[in-house]
Length: 320
Image (cartoon, helix red, strand yellow):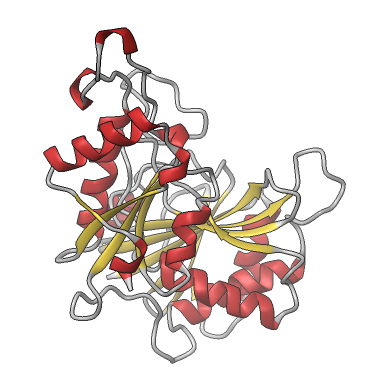
């Protein structure tokens, strides 16, 4: 089985880390995959470079397996991030748009209603990224953070995005092209996958602590979920408030139950839970709610629905 690392030549925050990774030992030209793609091989790692948007090449894992005959067990995308904070950022996040309905037009790839299996490496790699970034003096200039689940493309195996972010699209600071940030991301992949001969990082093993955090609520940078993950906790999907659309009930009709509250929030929770369960076989998936981000009726409805779905709720102390 192999790991796909995917980069696009049209994004400096993608091709920069890919180029830095390819400068490390052991790479050879890879097999012919598609005319518009170049591939490289290093042990069990396959690096793919293409010239399109990083979020539009769906099913690369299945296409690779069909064309090359190698089973893909995870996919890692290198990409840029447009930060909405006042600091540049190095980020890690799962992908999917589970809150969208069939027929909705995804703004950044993916398939409405689908959440890809989240990579079990995300939590351990966040800690490793922080360590490498600090050793290269990128902290505190860069924030090292998780992001909530968002955008495409479609994949069928555990997946994560690694991103280099800058302030806004109109910023004059070229953070996307920063070579020191590219080197840090390349080292994250190199060390995280054990490409230098050491042990890889974040390989799921249910014999250890088998509790997995499924984050519900909060903003895009999921700070309350991240506080727990930084204590070396497994993390699955992180579904922010904007991916839990809930239609406020008519209070004049009395207390509203989960079944009477419209919106795609229930579908979003179910899809993200099932995808997380797939990525962590044998794991105990615990929903962690950002309590302060919900109104009372929202929190009550979510708790009721989680009970109906037999999804356990975890408090911070339950993950340690």
